[in-house]
Image (cartoon, rainbow, N blue to C red):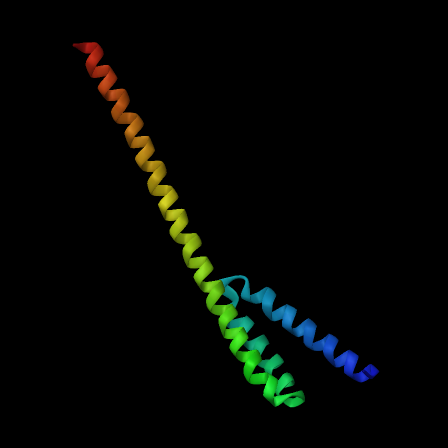
Length: 103
């Protein structure tokens, strides 16, 4: 590879890393998409056949990020419900024991 090609590959890698960093948070997905579109245009100019595959991989990555966040939120809700159920069970048990002592 030539020096220009190395520099171009390094630039593409840096652009990809920036887009991936933005994609980690759902709140910044629009910024990540914009960064990726800039990267995709550069890839398209260098290798049009690769650009289509690259875009499919990006979309799969974004879907997996969103899915992961969704399941994290579901897990947090389940944990909250489980904690509340445990507290309720303990309270009921304590009430039952008090009732038995009064009799």
